[in-house]
Length: 160
Length: 240
Image (cartoon, rainbow over all chains, first blue to last red):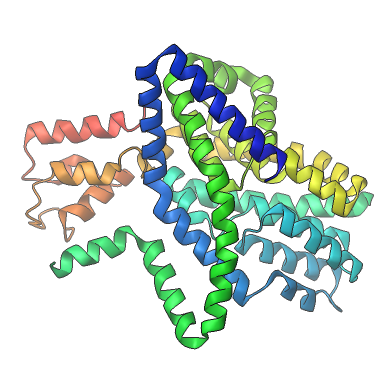
């Protein structure tokens, strides 16, 4: 468990204790809210995580290495960004991978696009996002994030 | 069980259905790939179980204890630039993948945050959260991390502002399927004889159209005045 996760747990537990000491009824109510939130989304999240697991087994992230060989930076950036768009990988997997890709000759620009789309643009998590915020919101946010990821990586290319 | 019930069940759990079928297909094709997928998935499960219960407990407490005015003051219309920075900050000190941010942002929106600020929180949560930056500096180097940060923060504020201009809060109100499933509640108010007078095949379909805001309750001719008002209340209540 990383430190922020532990921090989050500590915060959750201490707030819960504080709340219980102050008002038992309100605490019960908030736990109910939490339970409903979880119930409302658990099936979708579990299904989608299982789908991600399947996808990453069939198409391991290392496959982008194949595309990074003799293509131009622009094409490599678009490919990396697209790969990042479809899937969702935790940072502790994504960064070691990106770093090994750079060692293997990948350009930093395409790795920046990869990482930004990986975490911010979520094709596979879109069904969950739609349930909360609707289709149009999900579409607008993801398209803008994809464009921003490209812009950010190009901007970084100018500096690095 | 009748066919219709099963069909509805499958439709309501679309993602689960797709996943189960995909796994079955892989199992038939290659049992070893199936097992590999399960072990990859279990890694994601562990991450989810470490994070989501805590996030939901905190949000439940926020929902009950924190007043609408407080949230509005921090993330609402009047918060201005301070609201933007507060949003980046909240996202930065988060834990967990982006799907954990959806319920958080939904609660904040309900409590009075603007659409643009929740988009900023979502994006910051995704790309510049502190644990991620630390791992990034380790593997990609400090200058890579720093440069990406400097470009990303203005970009996500911009994404937030544009999304806030294009998407109104009312749109999210009408389209969110959270909040005790609006469609379900509207379906219960409709006559449920699937008469078809509204030109849709079933009352459920009509309920979906009404919940999405494409139709008004007036489209249902046999609907009595009391139920019509109930539905209008439901739509209004689904967001304060």
